[in-house]
Figure (cartoon, rainbow over the protein chains, first blue to last red):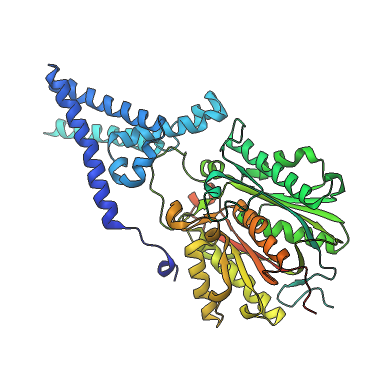
Length: 138
Length: 342
């Protein structure tokens, strides 16, 4: 009965917007990369600089109170790219400033992104060990 | 005359009078259908304060001041104050009303706090323990979001079933005797906790609808009445999903609520235009709707006899993470206009 009364999410529309906005962010990323390559920067360094630039843009748009408005339509399209991760860290910093720099920002910094950072780090260690063992074996 | 029904309905012998009301709302609420009815609009989400929490306390203090002015009474004439909000330890209320120096009962009825505080204030007045009592509640969108959900700037998508916490506060003065007043409280029915195993914290309406049904059915049984006996049955904060669910539950018991039902969560916002998904919620939702819209209609006689029932959902970040279901409760008041039918 709860299911019958609930309002369904517009899945088709959500997917389309996620594709367009997420794709748009990736296109901007590619554009930035091409600019760096055009400046004569090596491919690997250009890739890193692109990530850094996208993180900067994610934080900038969060600080301008625009990112969550884009995310309302973008959904997974704004969540998955690295800009979404930047937003997840920048948003609590803005929010918890009212509790001070130590007890507010200091403790709430990773309140949203924390699980990804902790488990991502642990997973990368496990992956490293597995990779090392496989290399030793063969 | 009996004081208590078998199912828990309470009958007021002296019919406490609602003599003053005050409401204050935020900018988004002012853009809704009831925008012109509030006593005051606070367009600044910080209300001139440093934090959202301080802003909520400020709203509550000002709602009380509006209610007192409307009642033409001094704060020193109030014997008891019943109030609460959504913030941890009811801190929004405590900081808001601290300066009044009144005996204070702090209530956590979640979104049902307006009905809960009014019910207890009416009981105190009816029993002669207070000549004048004050009921007050508030909620603040930004303060509630940061406590229960995500930081405001976090880019997440809200569920279609989610409700929008109202920024606002409502306050009512209850008195034992008065010549001019908004309404009489003639009966009430305190709610029982209902657990239907709802786990989705973004679907509060579904968690609260069974509680509303339980309270209504018990009150109907005790009083021998049905929806047709009331001009309006107004629920608080069930919004679109909860209201639909309430109809379905009551239909199983042979009760058709649709012709007389309204919901504060659907009255305060224009769902389509204001992008609030299922509707409004928060203590301030039925608090402001009661004070700004319903009480004046009772005073004018546009409504003669209504049921006002506010619903609340019990959950915390801890209980949600521990996988506990969301519990619902609904407190009911029977309000009648000053004009007597006889």
